[in-house]
Figure 1 (cartoon, rainbow, N blue to C red):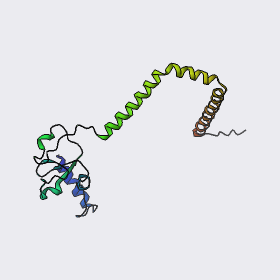
Figure 2 (tube, rainbow, N blue to C red):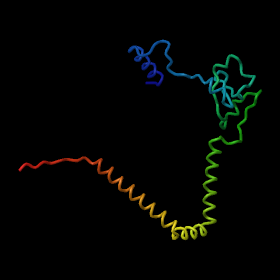
Figure 3 (cartoon, rainbow, N blue to C red):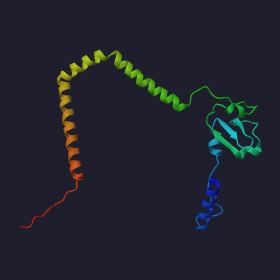
Length: 167
């Protein structure tokens, strides 16, 4: 069975059960709000890709505009001759943010690598100082408390069965 046939039969079944009225929307393809902010719009009627706000978009096509966030390879063939949209060489915002985070990570690694000997020495000195020893004791107490609570939680989750023995 073809997909369209299955869809039509499904719609008929839903209507026959009274769950769908004539005015109900099954599929909303209104991209007008999103198309206002997208850098490009695709005219689905004429098969043309325009820059958003292009004056060459016919009035009859305004209802058939599809929001396009970025052009893909091969889209150049569909471009409007008046506004001539072109693929931007700039990376998307998400890629820039990811790249920044990766740069920060590698910067921290580089810093640690460069100063690792100094950090080890300072760490050893701090650990052996009274402040370091005090902090280590507090840390151990905290870990024991967490471990104790975990055991209590685990014990409370286990089912308990009481057995009575009659003499």
